[in-house]
Length: 344
Ligand code: F6P
Image (cartoon, rainbow, N blue to C red; front, side, top):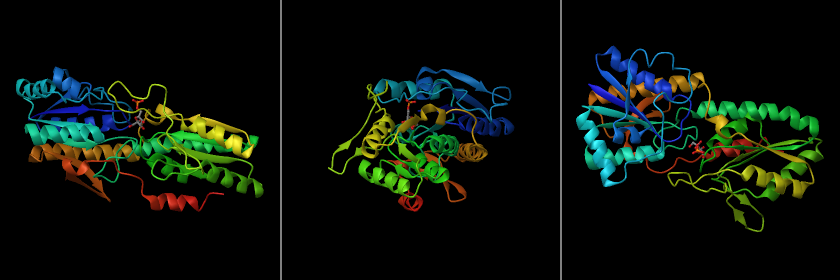
C-alpha cells in the first residue's frame, strides 16, 4: 500500500513520533509511506517527501513536524477536487491525518461525502479533542508550564509578589488546571468556569492574613475577565483572527494582573508562556502515546478501518467514528474542584 501522512493545524510535541510510527510500520511490512507537506495544502498541491528509513530516523525525540503543517482545509469544490485528484494521480491507498478538532471535522467530511480512505490521529497541546481521553502534546505542555510555575514560586516569594501565569489551551482550561494542580497554584481561571477578579483578590488577601505574601495565579488564555458587577470581558490580541480566520487568544494575563494590583495594592507581574508550550522535545508519556497512536493508525489503514480516529480510552488504544469527535472536550470540573482545596 502507499500511505500518506499529513500534520495539520498548530504543531505540538510528538508529531514526529507519530510520523515515525506510521513510517516504520509501513516500511517494515513492505508498504510505502509518503509525507504530505503542510497538511491538506500539500495534498491539494501534491507536494510530498519520502518517508523512508533515512527520513524517519532520529526524529522520535524531536519537536515540530518534519512534514510541516498548516491550517489549510479543502472547503471549496475546487480544493476537494484537487485532493481527490491527488489520491488518484499519486496512487494513495490511504492518508493518515494528524490534527485537532478542525482537522478531524474536514477529515470526516472527506470520508463521508467523498468516500476518501482517511484515518484521523488526535493531536494538540490543548487536549480539547472530543472522542479521546488525551491528545499527545498535552503532557509536554503541562510539564513546561509546571516547570515555569516552579521557577516563578521562588522569585514570587522573594519579592512578595502576585505572579500571574498565562497558559494556552484555546477555549478550554486543560493545561491551566493540570499545571495549576501540579504547580500548587493559588487560583486557576479557565474558560469553562467564570471567576471574578474580586474572588481572586479575596483569596490573595486571605493568604496575606496568614503571612503568605505571594501568590501564583494560573489563567488560561481563553478565560474571560469577570467582575462582581456581572461585567465579562474577553481579552484578545489586536489582530483577533489568524490567516485562516480562526480567533486568536492572549492578553488576559496582563489584564488580570492589572486588576489584581488595583484591588489588592500588591505588586503583580505576568508571564505569558505562549509558544514555549508547543515547542521542544516531547515527554516520554507523549512519545509513547504518539507511538501507540501511529502504530494503531497504520493497523487501521491495513484493516480498511477508514472514517475513524484513533483514541485513548482509559489505558486502551481504540478508535471512534470521526462523527464522534465533533465539538470541544471541556475540563473535568472535579479536577478544578480538587485544585480549589489548595487555594488560600
Ligand atoms: O491549539 C494550539 C494552540 O497553541 C492554542 O493553545 C493557541 O490558542 C493557538 O494554538 C495559537 O495558535 P497560533 O500558533 O496560530 O498563534
